[in-house]
Image 1: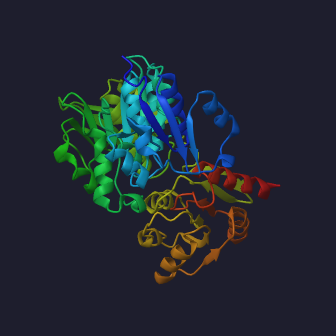
Image 2 (image 1 turned 90 degrees about the vertical axis):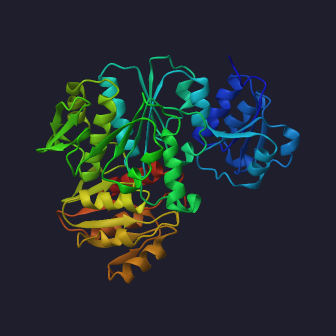
Image 3 (image 1 turned 60 degrees about the vertical axis):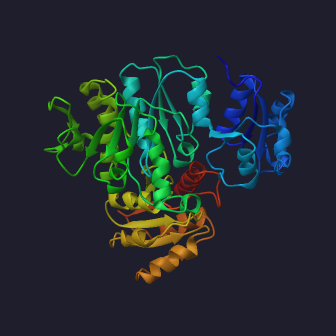
Amino acid sequence: MNQLKGKNVLVVGMGKSGIAAAQALLKLGADVSVYDRKKEEQIDPQLIQYFRNKNTNCYFGIEPNNIKDLGLDMVVMSPGVPLDIPFIEEAKKSGAEIIGELEISFRVGKGKYVAITGTNGKTTTTTLVGKIFKDAGRWTYVVGNVGVAVISKAMSTKDDDWLVTETSSFQLETTKYFKPEISALLNITPDHMDRHKTLENYANAKAKIFQNQEPNDYFVVNADDPECMKLLKNCRAKIVPFSRKKILDFGCFVLNENIVIKDENEKIYNICRVDDLKIPGAHNLENALAAAAISYFSGIGVETIGKSLKEFEGVEHRLEFCGEVDGVSFVNDSKGTNPDASIKALEAIKGDIILIAGGYDKNSDFTDFIDAFNEKVKHLMLLGKTAEKIKKTAEDKGFTNIHLAKDMEECVTEGFKLAKSGDTVLLSPACASWDMYTCFEQRGEHFKNCINKLEK
């Protein structure tokens, strides 16, 4: 039964998630209003015409000042929009339910959910799990924070379909009844402190991934991460640990340089050798372990899992090799949007590095990031809002080969001049992209375009 028909719903934020949610709600017969802080002239004219044809109330560049008059039953929040803005709080006080697109998708669609979260590795693990599921012959949608709105697929799913879903803390904090068959928590390190304020708040948002799971569901968790393990006391699902550092009594781990699964009957299954993986770095081994555990405990055979792991070549904008010019390699890690992600990138690169970093400030601390240079980083090219902040941290730690640049093109051209044959020019910003770009993908594409100009 359609419980949304005739409901008054405000959709906040007109990114991919918000647009998809508004379109789905209109199809379901809800009375929809939409809001975005951008002014009307900054919004796609075709989108505005679409909403007008549907008699949608549009608030572009102005906040709704008649919340009580709207009689809202529900507010659907886009992930990037803070929950504490005044008109949202007013809507909540007036009785509106505040949820997100992920929650709506779960309510209106069918299918089984795999939900994957963590500070880093979400996209790689989600994409890899999607590949394994598809290779196993399952009807699979790879959705969520990976770039495809969940609701754009949930509206057409069948009971036996799988939605392999990358979920961010922003998406999870607006869930209420969302319940995946299998959830996974890859790691927790400080991120989005401008929004969550404390690591505890951030971790609790991540923990919502398993809040509604039951004993017949599975929760895959990184046994090497103490912040993840702190959350287990509240988990009712069957806990499946994975580890790259220790032998486990149950779960997925490394044994004699093999990725193995040990099941409930203590039987050990070989998946593949660690050096069979094409994705570099210790963090990608963790991603592979998580993906293997998710897939095995969803009922996929070890041969299929092993074959898929050996074939997987990674995702765009995450340690993506972009070519070589005069012996200098270029690697695009634009998805390194926090210090810990970029630390993992530095650890994965062999040889000397000319590092391009900087961007939007999420109130991150860059001390550990600078410490991770370990004499591998020879020059630091900085751009964006955090350039001076990172520069000061580096200088305080004794690193002085720093170059402030006005844009990406200057970073690439000057970085290339500083590099020697055998070096790597690495874009791994340790920051979000929102000060200069609309998304990390746009930043990565610009980096690649700058490399292409060098080759000419």
